[in-house]
Each structure stands twice: as structure tokens, then as C-alpha cells.
Length: 396
Image (cartoon, rainbow, N blue to C red):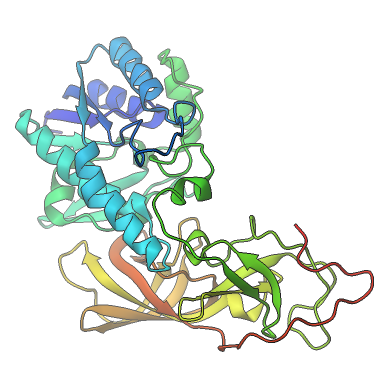
């Protein structure tokens, strides 16, 4: 295998740390870059909030620097906060304001980690870049394929589906060949200081703070009714932007017994968000995870990105409409500006703004942003129904 000058995105986590170690073991010249993508104090003027308990970038940099010291490699701290705000966060807010649920990790990979970071690495004389993602790259006949990581529980190809040929040609994913347990074992064996550090969760610029509290700083919001499938008001929402399809937590309504003939059946089933009606500012909710309003037999997607540079041939493939979902059999129809997927079996809580990612076996083909999916019937609001004795509606 040829030896390269490789710039590793060292995040402070164990996956990128082991990535750097493996590359050094293979004889590459390894240099590390720590990417700061969010300013700790970036919040609207006059908010008065103190976020110092939430942001972990300073801690992460200390961890990354400690790893670099153990491995004997140089590390550079680079601030991409301006690029992140312009390319990722602004789009994130636009999507939420439009009632959709975007996936900033997908956009961050395409715009920051494999564009701004890649460009910076090339200026440092890099021949390759590497990250701690659980995915793989395979070259065939001068073309590059993105493959799933070998650990099915950690595969991150979904978040990387917008990468193109030029980006994949310069990218290495060493831990994509390993299971997470093996990555932890290696980290322990070589004495990395972050060997037992917990994996980061959530969105990097929100950290551990309450998600709705964060969004309320940036998004306008108008309260409105929560309607059940009969059109009866069962609660009030704080603004449609703060909810996503399939959401169960934070609705503020207790389990009520469904009315006679109502789908779902049973007592005190949990509520789920099924539909957001921007025209009437109504949030439609249903009871029971298996409710038919939460199932979609098809979706349409736009803003497509194909790893091969062009759309795959129409026909039978597999797809994920959300991360950590099992591959779902479907039929692809390519259309001007997008595509349609017809699923073999209905999919749960297909959400506009999320990514629909296509696969042919272990090969990730690319995908697009979900624009539409099967919708529940429009139900107008009805007068409040009388409460039945012993049943409390609208309680938190």
C-alpha cells in the first residue's frame, strides 16, 4: 500500500484517535487537525443565557491534544465556525422554519468535514484525509464506491451519502473495517487517554442543552391546537417548528382512551406526532406506535446527490428513510429533479427534511432530501368533546 501524508480529523473521541493510530501503524505520515465548528458564545444578543455548561469543544480539544501527544503527531486547531454557520446552521434554521426536520450531520459532512476540512488539508500538503466514520471506500476501475461499515450497529454511510468521487478519492476510513468493541480494545491496549470516553450524541452545536429551548432562540413560533384523528383538540403545541413526525416525548398530553371505533384501540396508549399542517397551524397526533397515520408506502425526494455522479437505474433497491432504520426494500423511479420510492412494506414516520438513502447491498448509492410522503387525511378541527368520567385529557 502506498504511503501518504494523511491529515486526520481528530475530534477528541476514541474513533478518530484509533484512526490516527492505525494510519501511523501502516507507515503513513500523520498530521491531526481539530475542527471547531461552533462558537461557544454564539447566541442572539441579549439572550442572557450562559452556555458554558453545554459546549464541550474545549474539553474535546484537550482530549484530542492528549491523544496527539501519546501518538507523537502534530495537531492544529482550526476554526470552521463561520463556514458552519453559513453552510449548515442557516440551512438548518430555514428547514425547521418551513416545518421540516433537517439532518445537519449530513450537511456538515458534505460542506465542512469533506469540503472545508478537505480544502484545508490539501493546503497542508495532504494526499489523503481520514476521519473516524464507520464506513469504507472501495476503488473499482478508477471509480470509488462508498460501502457500509463492517459493524452494522455503527455504520455511518447514511450520513456520508452526499460525498462525491473527488472527495472519496482522497478519503480513508480505517475504523470502518472494525467493530466498535475492537476500536475500544485497541485504544485501551495502546493507552489512549480517551479509550473509555462516551460517544458523542445529538447535534454538535446544541450539545446537551434541551433542544426546544435552543431552537426557541432562533425560530419564530405560534402556538396552536393538537388535534386527534377525529379533529378534536387534545392539547396545545408551542409552535410547529419544534416537533417532528414520530415524536413521542414532550407533547404534554397524557394517554387517553381512544373513542369507540378510533384506530389504535386500547387504554392510555402514548401519543405520537403524525402530521404538521402549516396552513391551519395544527399538529395532528395519534395514539399507538402502529397507528396507520404513522405509516407511509411511498416517498418523494429532491436535492439528490449520487456517489457515482448519476442516478442509479430505476428498479428494485433498498433504502433508509432515517438513520438506524433497517434497509427497506423499495422500487426506485427517477424523476426530473428527484426520485420516488415505493416501499415493499410501509415505513414508519417518514419525515420531510430527512434523507432517503439508497443501497445496493453494502454499496451506498446516494440519496436525496425527503420532500413528501403518504399523508393522513385532512381532518378539520371539531368542538371539544365532553370529558368522560375517570379519563383525563390534555394532562402532562
